[in-house]
Amino acid sequence: MPWNDKSGGGGGPWGGGGNNQGPWGQGPKGPSGPQGSPPDLEDIIRRGQDRLRRALPGGGGASPAIFALIAAALVVLWAFKAVYTVQPDEVAVELRFGKPKTELSQPGLHFHWWPLETVETAKISEQLVDIGGGGATSGNTSGLMLTGDQNIVNVQFSVAYQVSDPRAYLFDVSDPDGMLRQVAESAMREAVGRRPAQDIFRDDRQGIAASVREIIQTTLDGYKAGLNVNAVSIEDAAPPREVADAFDEVQRAEQDEDKFVEQANQYSNQKLGQARGEAAQIREDAAAYKNRVVQEAEGEAQRFISVYDEYAKAPDVTRKRLYLETMEKVLKDSSKVIVEQGNGQGVVPYLPLPALQPKAPAPAAPVTGGNQ
Image 1 (cartoon, rainbow, N blue to C red):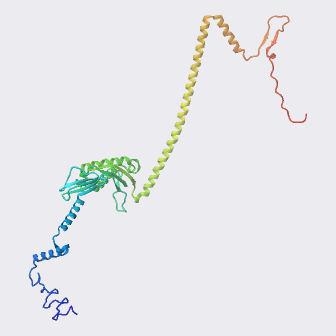
Image 2 (cartoon, helix red, strand yellow):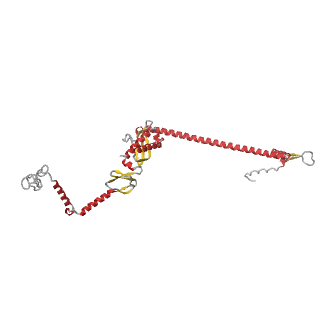
Image 3 (tube, rainbow, N blue to C red):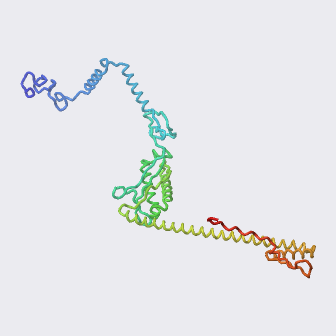
């Protein structure tokens, strides 16, 4: 084969000479270059320049248009890097030689002297971080906490926060979001550890959430993290899955107890309402009777005083008037017979007045059917 042909003439496969020459006709390779001489640095640079000239248009001449094009590209690149945009929910802090400036860049288009200045942005809108909700089986134990009465609960809660100091948020703390998560978890463990399990299950969730928010905010202010905690919400609190059935039984028993107590309270309120209503009615009746008796007594007393005044003016007339009024009341509903005294002639001495009164006609008998 021509690869193995070492006879004279053609030499190598590219027609190179023999005598241990290389395929391009150079001498045998040594450790540094041809014939063992070191490579020439100037020759390498010259060859690179020649190749660059051949690659450029115009045969490698120094064309001003080429340099202008390169300069324009560099200017465009610099302008692209120097102009930056801040989103509506962000603010930016410019750094000159790594030192933050005092003023903040508000949302919009801004300019800075790149690369002497750089820009860091921080989102100032409210953000939400969820913590807990796992379990021992899922590998996430951040929600497993020990209560004050030595029970284990699995708490899932969320923290709503926003950046209040962008410079402190960006440069004073290396990982503010991760630190917030750790501080929130620690604060929740502290608050839950001071309360019984029933408080976290249902009785005092709002109080625990308020206490956790206060602890988180105090800790973040001490760290100068530049964060403001808006709210803490306990979304779920349940026993671990291993003992969930037993806790559910206890919860159902407590719910039944609450239901029975509520029913008893409703019955008590109903009976008390009825008793109060009856008592109020009796008091109103007694007050009305009292007013009526008092008014009647006052009327009788006033009438007696009036009669006495008239009697003092005319005793005989008043006495006769009282006698006649009394007789009228006594004889009003009794049968009356007038008998003339003495033996008068031509006059009937006996006059039965009730017999002389006209009698009411008897009602007609009802007519029954039949032929007459």
